[in-house]
Length: 198
Image 1 (spheres, helix red, strand yellow):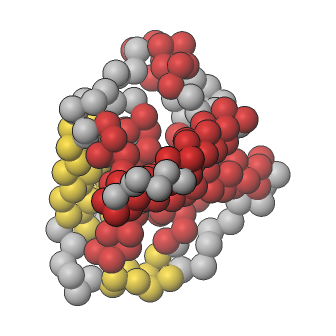
Image 2 (cartoon, one colour):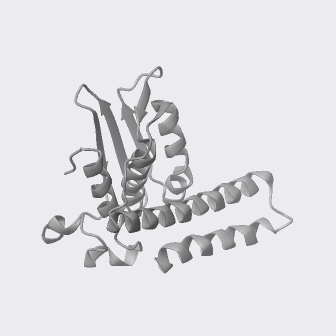
């Protein structure tokens, strides 16, 4: 947990130091501000995930109140938070959906946001530079189907059964940070929403 908080704080401090330079042009000032903001969002997301997991352990994880919102607007806000990460790592992000602009969804959007944030941030974290990430979201009579694919490091076969276990991290990816709750929390939320994950 300390690593997950310390890393973005160190990055934020670095960008704030750069912003103090008088010679910065407007373009660089905007870029550094955007990246500092993105790291602040990462820190908040990490803390929220940790607190949500604590509620789950105490049996207090409940479905949040449903909210009606235009789905494409909801997705635009989520994806925009990761634009600095895509730029820094030179990752090409491709998003596809069959949702029309007129589609409003009545759903537990807070849980859906946590699920999507974990999927996207994991794909970024475990991808090298100049790689691709593909996110597809389809609506059908049965519900919502979310498919994410990256060109990252991959997961060893012997670790695949354990990736949804709390605090578990593969030895191969232990150097990338995190504290092993993202996919465990995702599994908890999908179960609460009567969904399936593979």
